[in-house]
Length: 486
Length: 143
Image (cartoon, rainbow over all chains, first blue to last red; front, side, top):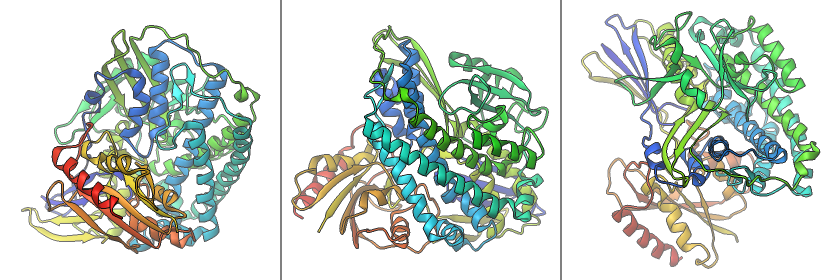
């Protein structure tokens, strides 16, 4: 059996490794995504005061710290059995939408964007942000940077720190918003909304109006029929900060919903010998293997899953685009993995609209932002939608609030089984009789990049970034070719 | 002329926190230099470096060959390499991008890195890295 390695994966937040095994005819026998993640965080958390968790857990990842902070803070609300005042709840949601907006945009322009805006078969040297700038123009790139910067500066002032926010506390937040901050929020919200609308327009003009791209999005190689999961509000609309988790089956029918500790009734984890990652699946269906279709017990999370699991969006412009999305792609649910990119832009639009709505809500100026009626802690669960999908924090403590057990189900892990199946499917469709070139490998990588995965990027060493190395071995294990981006 | 010592790391990833350890020790003590601590990387560092003429990055480094605790010094030059990881864009790539966008970025970026083993979750520095950190602090104090 011949082996092709892609290591490390390009444009991915963390280290990963794809191994593709070829049969004697040079066709793909099986492709694997292996994730050598940092392990042991749950152990690391034991013995620490629960109140420290919202400051510690964001350090798991330098990319989605706000999601960990917020899931952890909500977990503390449950642990100490306290409800934040309405103003605190709204400010948290506002802050969270700011994070969702800037994170989604970063992914669209820097990670996924090069595949579509520049093109999946463009020369390797152009398939990056500079290629994106070449397509959309330098002025837009400056707008992107200035919009994100404005959002992040405000997040720093509200959250204490933008990368590792410290403002969330059990029962509320650390400080109310000043009139000056609220005025800036209104201004930045408008700027963010303008940019989100521009991005959607660009997506339509560059991607959706290109029949080849649309064909690629809807091609069988990128089709995967799974169940879906996402937070919804009381009207079953996409929600990032709170609500109930709703699960729909492969036909889009609701098959369950839960909040808090009930997640244990719905989610179980499967272990494979070739990876440290545990593959979550729907407990009630049992582990059925790496299969899609009617028999699958695998569920997906993140933007496409959230749109499939909901009945609509929270905000008017996002709702319009939500309808266009399903109309264009053949109705609900959409099983095309590359549609994650479009769904992400729709969510960025909702996030920007929510920023505008919430910054104009008079209640956010209230000084009442903390409820101190904390009770003796025992056990709590906090759930938010990270940009990369449903994120669950679960802590058990003693009566002093010292962590005895911690369990984190992170979004990328929930999509791990689907990513493996997608990569396998794309590899089989594109690698024939041993013919492998860089275009084909990029098409394989596109399968997982759509998910915006993030694998244990807690480390931080110079120079940052990753060299790309592709190794091709004979069936006897002899390396016959090595490709690199350096 | 504004000059910056930018200390990077993750303090819950063991020896990967060495940059932050050094930063806390030297902050306010190096005349003529601002000292910032950050756990950001790549693209995010442009925001930290914008407006400075000269920057020294202090960070950990994982070497294929080399000893834990070894101090590596050098100069970063902008890179024309393709960007393999925009969220974790490498520093040379981030500098190239920033200049292309017309940002006011340092004309000289040096680095002082301490070799570590691949880290895992944990607090505090190993003995070898701690010793190297003290040497690094002494070097930076003589700027």
